[in-house]
Length: 84
Image (cartoon, rainbow, N blue to C red; front, side, top):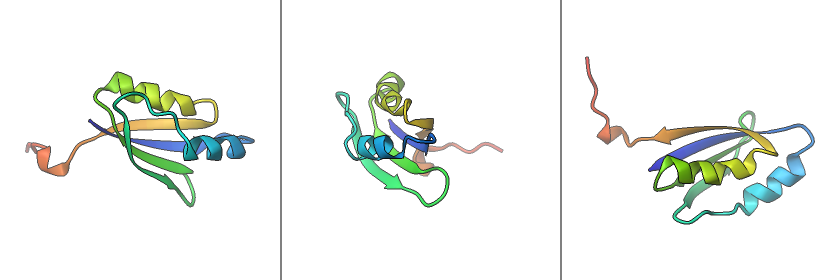
């Protein structure tokens, strides 16, 4: 499963957040595809793969003390079945 997390750094946490974003702890079976610093909000964006939502949550919760996070499941557009 592919996930996208948006991270907005909390006031006073930029240094710690930068360190953590550069060296995140990876639970088993989590693979980071991209970790971007952003101009504007959000401050960072991480695209990662995890086998399930529980594992994805284990990965994202490490950022909770330095950033507000919003995580979404990402689906390849080709796999969507559009209805009218």
